Image (cartoon, rainbow, N blue to C red; front, side, top):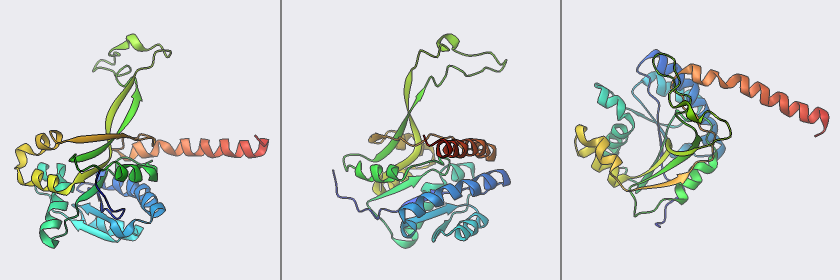
Amino acid sequence: MCKVSSNIPIFISARGNNINISNKNKEALKYTYVLIEEMNMFNQTYIISDSQEMLDYAKLLGFKHFIYQECKTKEDIIYLDYIGIYNFYKKTGYKPDWFILLSINQLFRDKNLIYNCIRNIDCKYDVIASYTEISNPSSFVLDENNKIINGEHLNSSIIERKKIVDASIYAINTDFAIYIMECGEADRSKVFWNGKFKFFKNNSLYTDIYLLDDINKYNDIINKINKVKQLSIEKGI
């Protein structure tokens, strides 16, 4: 293990290159704000975006540090966070040993996720990543004709637990990140996934948010949870 400061920088990319993504990310950024506020980590959190409008919105929410990164190609958009961090380092010379990368697509992170990620940092590795356990991930997938694929495990008494890299949080060795950026566009993904990974379990509610509709689905759940809480109070149980 290596000693890591609790002030490790946190980078969050919030793309805004089209109206659908912008609307979804503005809403998702509110959830990230709540997490950062609970942890009082505004001084070490940086919002990266290809949209000045998105950065202005983040500023209205209360974030303090921003990185604008112009994206000219699809590759630029895919690697927005890495390119932004790399150019920020080249411009400012700011080079911590490690940094945390948070995905805006995971809404319901518990603050312990960040603490656990930091505690799991080990200098023998390049990347510390969270994983989530899910049940029967492929049993209910429909094909193009709306036929169930792999339907033999639909019996609810049969539970298969699968571990997936949930992309909720990464702690990345900065030297490794710089190496990725300097190896050339064609090799970035290969170099990243061939790095030395250490995984730890994420006990937060797993979400996969890519559309504003994905967020709106939770509104009814919130109402039901509040009603259940009120029921418990009324019944004294």
